[in-house]
Amino acid sequence: MLLHIKNVLSPEQVGHIRRVLDTAGEAWVDGRVTAGYQGAPVKKNEQIDERSRVAHELGDLILGALERHPAFISAALPRHVYPPMFNRYGGGMQFGSHVDGAIRISPYNGLKLRTDISATLFLAEPDSYDGGELQIEDSYGVQSVKLPAGDMVLYPATSLHRVTAVTRGLRVASFFWVQSLVRDDAQRTLLHDMDNAIQQLNATRADDMARTRLVGCYHNLLRMWTDC
Image (cartoon, rainbow, N blue to C red):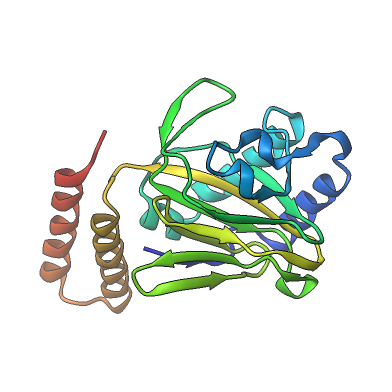
C-alpha cells in the first residue's frame, strides 16, 4: 500500500522544525554514515546526526503528532516506530535505487525493529525545489511522490525506491520506519480499507447491526493477523 497522509504536521510545526534544522550547524553530517553496503555507493545527501539533541527533540515532536493522527494509526497499525531522522538534498544530491534494510537498531535503547513500512514526511514546499522526487516502484510501475510540507507518504519497506537529483533549492524531509502489528502489506491494506468503510458507515448512521458485525469482522481479522 502506497498512501498519502495529509496534515501530519501543522504549518506552525513545520516552521518550527525548519528553523531548528536550518540553524543546526555541525549536527548535519554526511548521509552515508547510516547507509548499508547497498545504499552507500548511491547515496549523496546530508542528514542530522541521529544521536544529537536536535534529532531527539524534533523526533519526539513528530512521534507525538503521529500518535494523534488517526489515518496513520489506521494505515500503519504501529507496534514500534523508529525515531524519526532528518535529511536534506541540495544541488546535485540524490539517492539512487535501493531497498531499505530489514532491521534497524534504535540509537537510544538498542531496540531491534523490523522495517515493515517506510515513511517520508516532507518539510519543504514542492515549489521551493526542483527535482527531489521520491520514486517508488510497485506493481503499477514507478510512482513519483513530491508532497506539500507537513504531508507524509507511507509505502512498503520492501519497495525499490530512489530520490532524484535536486537541481534547485533544498529538499528537506524526515524519514523513519514502522514495525507494524500486521506484518503482511496486503493484510494491512485490507484492514485499512475495512476501517475506512466502518468510519463512513458510522458517519451516515447506517444499520447498527450491520456496523456491529463489520466491526467484529475487523477485530477478528486483526486478532488473526496480529504479530506481537
